[in-house]
Length: 118
DNA sequence: ATTCTAACA
DNA sequence: TGTTAGTA
Image (cartoon, rainbow, N blue to C red; front, side, top):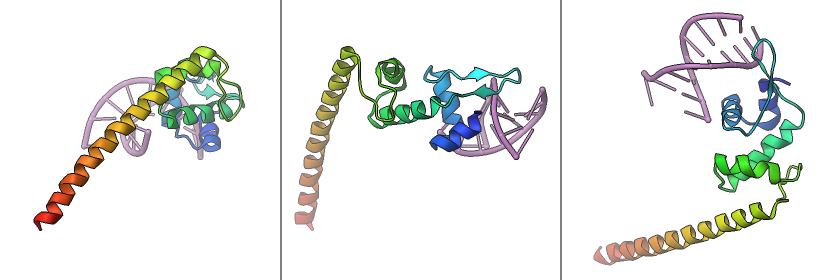
């Protein structure tokens, strides 16, 4: 299939699909015309990419993670090294949440002071 | 009608 | 990422 169909079947813009290729996430063949040709397997592959993006992973990390995932819609890590990195990523998110909660508490204090000040 | 590359109000 | 120009 060409990029238009893949875009429709995945809900991902053609622009994004070309960008994913540029970043090494997809490797479509090329027709003599220059048109990209995708395989059926690229449909679930794109969904996996979106899941990983939604999980907060960067393009570079996703490029390395894709080979270590089961070929299913819901990515399951097969390489132990990948699992370790994902856990590390999860920990960073936890830290970020803690910092945001502190920031929110500080804001609440200011808001409270403002209300008391009228 | 579709896709491609390159570039930016 | 969207969008647009000029092509093939």
